[in-house]
Image (cartoon, rainbow, N blue to C red; front, side, top):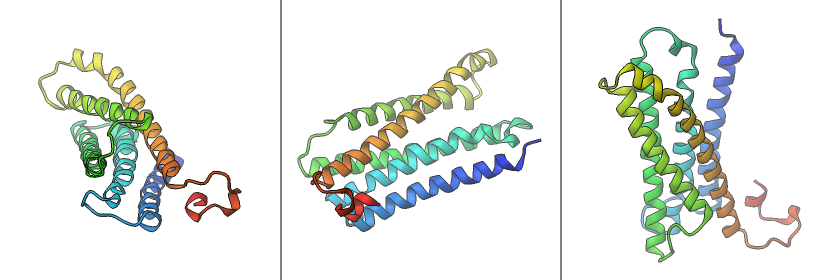
Length: 199
């Protein structure tokens, strides 16, 4: 029997994920001027929000579906559909986030894919797309044999965890990069930094 601590942990993780999204929205709205879809800096502000929501929160939630005790018994199809749907939602949010940043860069004549963050991020998204497509084709569609699914399952699980780790690294490096570009003065004492730096 699963203890209440497990469900409390799930609730805590969901709450932390929601807080990550809300804090990113607050950061972009309050300190970065809000949101728009016109090629301006306000269009860029969609990028951090959508990447945190897609590549960390939804992707992480999709990865945890099979850890729920209810998924251990009974038919697997509803859990497979939920797993695939959460990953699809993560992918859609990620693509829209990439459209936002590429459009902003192109509008301002800024080079695309020029930093470690951008290359780490685009590699992560490429691996995520491959993982989703292959997982959909092998595990959700009925054509694959059981021995093929058994062979690929540990590989799928390993790459799922690796891509989630890459997603988190990409998001952290992106937030740091945004702060480095936004907060120029590094010689001031910590207590006198702008409130955005302290938040």
